Image (tube, rainbow, N blue to C red; front, side):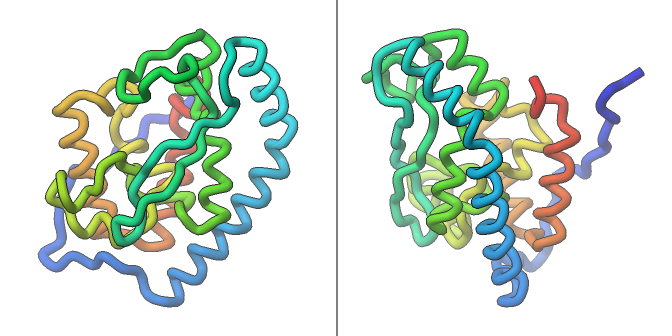
Length: 206
């Protein structure tokens, strides 16, 4: 018996006319939803945040929360907060993990808990394209990506296995295509569907 039901997801397709922005009403609803979820998440997860902080301090020396340069709306840079999963001063581009605890944080997504602060500050959204370390319009030829806030969870994360392909050339190309699909079909109802599928995803609990 399967604990998680199999989900049939649609193939990548494009609309003939891309609709990059939501209606003003949906934008207001989405921002209100982001604020409510971010505040609730920070409050409800505060005991877990404390335990993770203590564990990181005991595991290895270094800061508890790392700050990474990312690109947001209008290609403006912001500091993305994330629990440290590598040794202090280790370059994030290596994507290697110093401890088993760091690997656990990455696999479970608990390293993203501090990003709720980014959401509350308006730099990110609960749902959106995956945040890139390089200006997407300059490198990935997807200039419309900078018109929306990056998200904690994304369509690419739901439909593809980011744990295996996120840092391979082929995986990155696929992720960009899934982000493009999200941009061309984005709506508040689509965001809710992505959140629902995220909760059903087995990777969310492993």
